[in-house]
Amino acid sequence: MISEPPSQPSRRPVGRRYAILLFIVLALIAGWTGFWKFAASKAQDAIDGWRSREAQAGRIYNCASQSVGGFPFRIEVNCDRASAVFRSNQPPVELKTESLVVLAQVYQPGLLISAFQSPLTIGEPGKTPDIIATWTLGQSSVRGTPAAPQRVSLVFDNPAVDRMDGTTRLTMLRAKHIEIHGRMAEGSASNKPVIDISLQLDQASMPAVHAAAARPVDAAITATLRGLNDFSPKPWSIRFREIQAAGGRIDITQARVQQGDIVAIGGGALSINGNGRLDGELRVTIAGLDQFLAAIGAQQRVQTSPNMDKIAGALDRLAPGLGDVARQQAGANISAGINLLGEQTTLEGKRAVTLPLRFNDGLVFLGPIPFGNAPALF
Image (cartoon, rainbow, N blue to C red; front, top):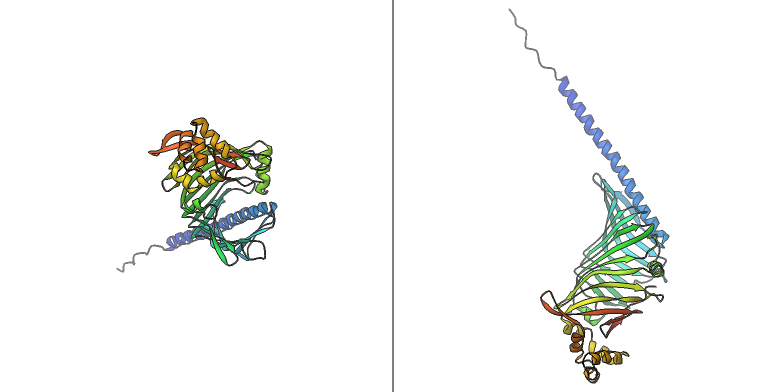
């Protein structure tokens, strides 16, 4: 008897399963590719929308060449030799940088993250730049749509800003880290927006501003801007005019500044008068007042101040004869007088004094001491 060989199991079902799996994978790849292209187009629309929105305010952005990539999980728009011309400035100002990369995740096309490559040059179009800025990391993020922006952030590591004076570079800014954040706190971009702004400086020095600012400063400041009609594209000088006309204000909700052993905190409200200058008062608590007054040259300021009689009068009301001492010694004892005029307290475990920082038509006074002159906002 001859036995039949055992039957072999059919391989057709296994092959069919592989074919189905391969079809599913190919379908997923094709579907994801289509989704990526759709998301990339949305991100490109958002970028074009921001560019169009800025152009309405006279800020024109261009690229020598532009490409889109980042498949499969993000969208990258590479802009080589990026430039921006601010035509609303008089004279116009042009910014140039080597490259700009704008990133968006496929699942968050409304969040745009940008990376800037230094150096950045600033000057009149077609002329030698007046300012050169460099950094090791420069990024921004924008959340929202062109019609309804929600939040904007700028971050720089190791920024350095120099002003050109012929062939000489003058130092304007050096810092370890800078952050600026803005968000819509109330209202909307088209109806009475209220903007929260925060600024963080780490080891920042600005010798061109004042000799006292040449030493590194750490600062954290938060403020709220009230009085805008809308946030449509327009120069900031026009925005500040709107704030003044609407009776708006700038609320300094919290501020802390430290330079070595000098520490100051404060807050208050400032308004803008018809001349475009600041009015208002901040309450400031300072530890290390003697060092601070020496750093800003208080003695010379008192000696040359046209308000010397007012300063001496304030000191005389506190203690008869103190004003004459201030006049005779041209401010040598002004620190003691200021300490007596202020409210004695402690700050972070140090002896401190609380004083008003007053703004009067742009003139700035710390107590009775002239401190500086804030520039006009329009």
